[in-house]
Each structure stands twice: as structure tokens, then as C-alpha cells.
Image (cartoon, rainbow, N blue to C red; front, top):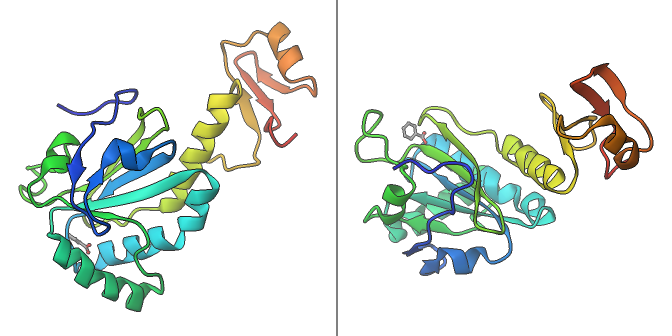
Length: 212
Ligand code: BEZ
């Protein structure tokens, strides 16, 4: 059954480039980006894994860590890591699950048989420190992901968990936010004493609260 936002991310134990991983234990108190790629030694995947390695400091700033997956064996992952470093300039610095027995792929519904009946699609799950699934996205094999978008969503989730705002289209950290509709104008005066721009009664723009 497909996993939905708000579901608890299923726990598992699986082998990885960093040895066996007990997922919930490994996740600890961090945010997690769990993502699958179709196959080792393929071009788009090579660029993606280099990029996720490059972005490690950005994940760390957000108390987040990445973990990748494909159904290839761990020896392939380890051999491929050299190619990633050579061609992308960033060596693999996060674990890659070797899900040859499909334990995780099945739990997370990462194989979509009408796309490909043996390989994982490009799934992304953002999981919060309470182990709740906060985002799911699925990309086709031929489209490399934009991991800046994943960072943007983490920024939005972390902000909106703490403040009574939502983030508008194309928002990035520091841009104006939206006061959530459940907050009355009376409450808003207390929460946002600097005021807001009321474009419509339901569309109230406010400076990003933790930057104001
Ligand atoms: C790739 O990573 O380049 C790729 C993998 C599977 C299908 C198509 C492209």
C-alpha cells in the first residue's frame, strides 16, 4: 500500500555501503531524505549522487541526512563510488542501501511495475525526527532531481512547524510568508506585531517571522 503524508516511515534493517543499517536507529533525531535511484553505473544517477554528496553541509545545517537506495548489490555501490568521485568531484559521503532483496523498495513502494518491473523509480521521502513522512515525490528514471528543491521543502517544513505561517509559490528562505487562515486578525496582531500586507482577507503576507 502506498505511504501517505503523516504516516510513520516504516522501519527496516538493510545492508549499505556503511554496513547494516537499522533505519530508525540510524535516523535518530535527524530529518532524513530517503531516496531511491534506478541503477548503479548509469549517467543520471551518477550526477545525482555527486550532487547529494556536495550538498552534505547544507543537509547538516538543517539537522538532516541523506540515505540512497537501489536494488544493486553493495559491491556494485562501492565500485561505482569511485566513478562518482572521479566524474562529479564529490565522493559518496552518505550511505547507499543495497536493496537486492527489495525489502525497502517494497515497504516504500519504490518499484512501479508499469514503469519498470525490476528497477526502483526516483522516489524521495522527507521524514521528520518523529519518523513521520512529510513529503513524497516520484520522478521518472530519465529526469534527474533538483535537490535544491528538497532543501527548500525542508526549510519550509521546519519554519511552518514552528510558526503560524505557510510558504507561497517558489518561496525560498528569507522570502515573505503567508499567515495561515486559521489565525484570526486579532491573533495575528499578537503573533506578527510588525504587521502584514492584506491582499485579500485570506491572503495576508508577512515578513518571514524568524528573519524579521
Ligand atoms: C540514469 O541514471 O541515467 C538512468 C537510469 C535508468 C534509466 C534511465 C536513465
